[in-house]
Length: 78
Image (cartoon, helix red, strand yellow):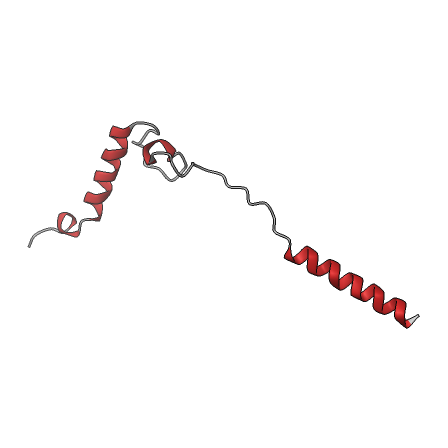
């Protein structure tokens, strides 16, 4: 009886090890790595003035963002 218990426990440990070491398929969603940023960007975090696929509006959005982050433009001279 003790041998059967050891076999059951050993079988359970081996099965748990196999399940724990198996790798799940990774599903990626979103834009492809080789897509242009102006085409691939399409989510809720975009500027309202940007339209996906329009390179001109993409460049304008980047320029506006850079101006907004420039401390010399944002600060007022004394």
